Amino acid sequence: MKKVCDFIAQWMGVLVLLVGAVALFLPESFIWIETKTINPMLGVIMFGMGLTLSPKDFKIVLSRPKDILIGCLAQFTIMPLLAWLLTLAFSLPKELALGVILVGCCPGGTASNVITYLAKGDLALSVGMTACSTLLAPIVTPLLVWLMAGTMVNVDTLGMLLSIVYVVIAPIIVGLLCQHFLPKLTKAVTPYLPAFSSLAIAVTVGIVVSHNADRLMLGGMIVILVVMLHNLLGLSLGFTIGRLLRLEKPKCVALSIEVGMQNSGLASSLANMHFAAYPLATVPGAIFSVWHNISGALAARSFQRTTDNGLPRMKSAPWC
Image (spheres, rainbow, N blue to C red):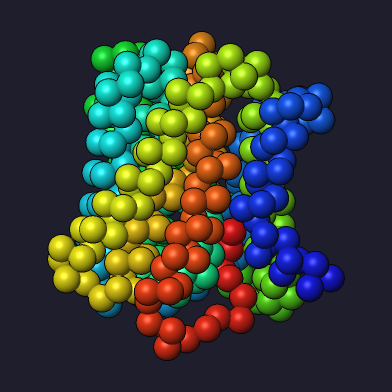
């Protein structure tokens, strides 16, 4: 069972790609699952994240404040600004522009730590950045969406704040409490969490893509190009900023991956909850969910050849 789970976690990118392709060309395979299940799915993933976090993951914020500050500033400036500029450059329709902006304003992706580990980057920094950006998201994400998209649509910042607390923060807190009060159970299930989270991410992608298959087939190429550019520019600028600040290569790798990989599942969830009048707003998040796992895997392979191989190995990745 453990080998099967390790295999699923290792090939997460391929799994997500296959599920996305099936959902696009055979939408009936996933369309029977209602979109309202996306929120519980994301909550389960966040719960798994809480089970694997430990006090030392939060201590890094105090022990390495400069690195965390650089990472969070890069996370919440580069991706939102790139999203806004790309929507202008490609003159995207309001619905698609909103979706791209939502992706850009979300915190770091839940798969970034696995990719950083595979890329031999600074894993502790990656985990600390993900935890910090996720905890900041209830305040920062609604404000950024309001600033970037407030002139296009009505943005309920308080509603978005409460949604992020409900879907993201609360499950993490429950996971942390379970880890504290049920340590034996937590230790028993932790090795299987990467595979479980990978499957949950894949199913979430399948749901979003299947419910938007017609729209993707009709006008998907331009938004696919924008999403790919958004991700690739984020990866590149994250690494470049690290180099300009003369950070060590493992830190640059972690910064690159954290900036480039977004919690696109949260973006689709927010679009579904707060912008139901603009159904295409869920599409960029769905595409990003597929693409950033592919680009992340390719980036990890590329970084492996250039980073220090002397970094300590981890028995299992913290979460997917």
